[in-house]
Image (cartoon, rainbow over all chains, first blue to last red; front, side, top):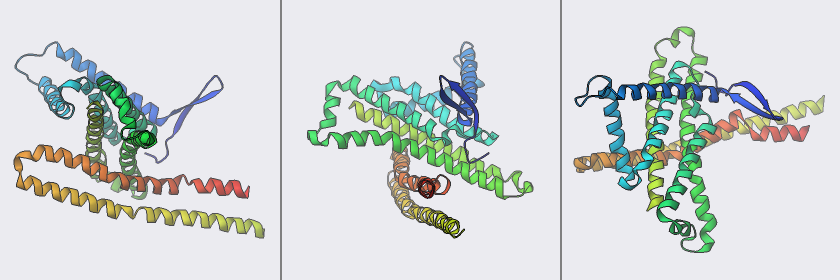
Length: 225
Length: 97
């Protein structure tokens, strides 16, 4: 583990340098694992029975918990957003969990979290425009035309604060674990870091994934009403 | 020789000021934690009074904790930028050439 994001490979496409960093490689590794898991679940889905057992139990529990949470936060009318945010939740959670195995968490790079937050912002604009048409556009000039820049800044600061929150939490965990691995002798690196990993990766990762998804759902619901 | 020494001293002072600034920035954690503690204590009090509404209170509590945490996270990021990617340092190096 390292503080800086390592640059693995530099592509040269038409005179433009494209950097393949550690973040991109780790993102693809996590994506491959998640896709393999999804295909595995899809194959298992054919042999599902009315009375669940084994793997089916686990999958049904996860989906039911998420469904009740998302329907609670979104309402019936907007429930078509729920699958995308389950993907985001799974990605954020697994990216912080895989940093236990020495992969640098992709969410400890601002580019990843800002991309996720920007997707939430786009969904928010899309939802607002789809459900309220021009009343949504009118809400930007709400009390007065003079308030347009203020409203725009208020909307655009949402993805920035959301992405910085996730990024800061993941980066602080990475820094503390790097300091621990760098400062302690080799004998202290067996067993004891488990507690740090459990606290900074699993607990904070789950909490921040929950908060990220919850805030996005809240913004989307506010935009549609 | 003397000029080089003076520029090294100035460089050291720039780094010193950045590190002191990073330490001061981290003090906003005090206020952040105070606000978060207030949110958590109020939520616990409300759950004690109305245990049947515990689930909705808990989710609201997590969201407000996250929002209160934002300023602390901003401070942490500013401290990290000052320590590891100091923008003043580049400006200064360009200034002395």
